[in-house]
Image (tube, rainbow, N blue to C red; front, side, top):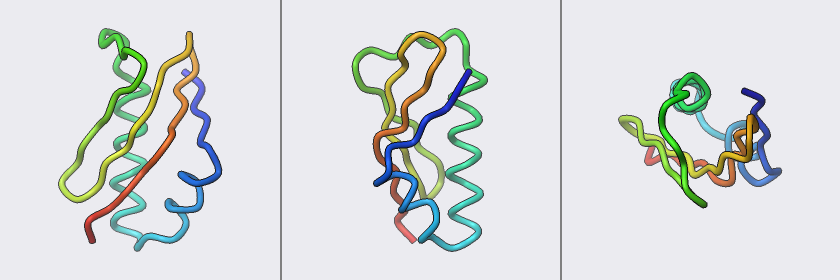
Length: 70
């Protein structure tokens, strides 16, 4: 699957500490590898400290928002 980040989400990824950055990338990778879950209009994935909100359009995952509680 192809992953696209909107600018706001990309900005957050570059502004968080390395540990949070790795967790967000892990969440994106997990979503991209999950071929069975059908995401409706909006879906979310949660890690220990971070989360992301995304949609799936065909074979493209569009990451709309990311955040971190650290």
